[in-house]
Length: 392
Image (cartoon, rainbow, N blue to C red):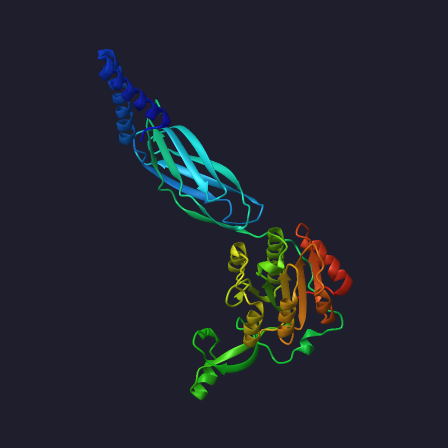
């Protein structure tokens, strides 16, 4: 199609022809015809030299954290025998920017590469590509574009801070306080008991000798130590957050504690607005969920807690919110028999009166401002009221 220069040339040619029609000067007709023919020739040129390219892309990393920078390398190869001139390459990272490169000449079967950097902010999942190429004639009167390059995904995780230790309220022995035996569907290494097979169970857990004896498929139910289990619950109700920054701080807190628990060997789950908690040990899936999480007005957080209680679990409960309210206090009370240790992480510049209720229930609290740092607050709270232990 014509470039801006080409459209100007066509316009000039048509204007000269109109003037010829008015004044009858043949030189005007000649000049106007020349301009139009020149543009048509340019269009024919780019069509004859349509780029035949193989384009590939290498991402420095497909997963980064909010604020990180990654590199993107494009590899372009001319599949044709004719050289390509005035070749423009462009590649877009959805919502983050557009990179463009100029290649003066690319010989037949020759390859070239170009690298650019992307600052990844904010968190989310972004489409990279498709890469496109544009070729033009020597006078840049016409151009032809193609966009058949590859498409990749770039996942920007929330900001993650390094946390150390895990809170256990002094004087409390979680293993002794468990109200009943608790099991992990993912399982540990210690044999615990047997139960009947249910659809969807892992067949590798079938206890074949006992199944042969009873005539019923029996599954080995394995125990995970109480101290090694946790549930991270991210409050997604917009009403508890003072600002968008406060919500982002809470998401960062949830990502930080999930990372810390997984690294420490915890059998952790994450709830971030889904119908049910997800397995945080599948780290990439959990972090992608946090990369995409948004606030939701329709969440009944007490109903969520009731569903979680029915399914059981146990261990430590980490509540991540903004300004803790009575509904969240009810959540803690609903889950207190299952989760005997509770940590409340609040992203707020004010102090909620509801914190008194949490303190009376023995809940350890970590509070930061929307522009603060979780790591410092976590360490300070640990020193003042917790004993730092490692997961067994």
